[in-house]
Length: 63
Image (cartoon, rainbow, N blue to C red; front, side, top):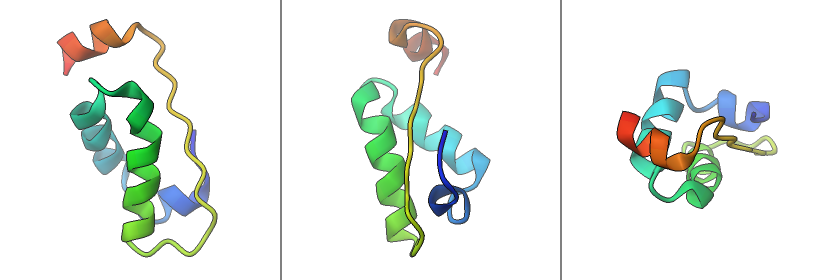
């Protein structure tokens, strides 16, 4: 879940790519996404929550 401060700057595909790259550090996913939106010039508020519906170990195997 994220506010338009993220979605105005980062595409769905980019979000998935960042999560795949960060899945081994699940606590960093939201921070990386928010940082990416800010670096791309977002002037809106940026709120990001990443929820894994499966254990992170499962996500690590998938990605």
